[in-house]
Length: 105
Image (cartoon, rainbow, N blue to C red; front, side, top):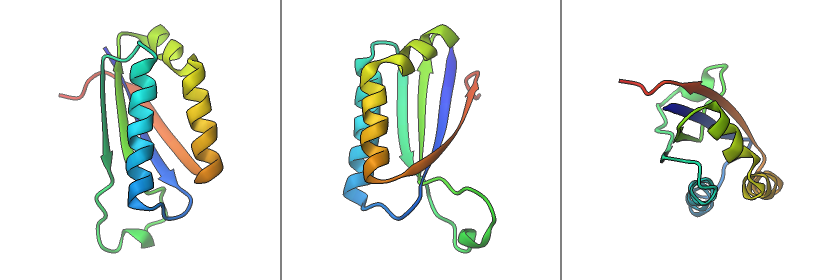
């Protein structure tokens, strides 16, 4: 199994209800692709003073588990995924960093 872990950082503050909707939407569209075995989303837990650190600080973490790299590619090629990305980027621009990796023990 391969895990695809994304750190999502919105360019500006996003209302809690909208962040919740974003996380629900991304889990649903990936599940609907039929390629995802596992999924989890979580909000970033801020630490006082972290805004002074010159690093990308995630707003949320999103993780999907898939069988292999071909399956991961097929999941992201699903038309619903592209539509979701464009729709949310238009509302609340964000940056993403990700890593594909074996499950963490």
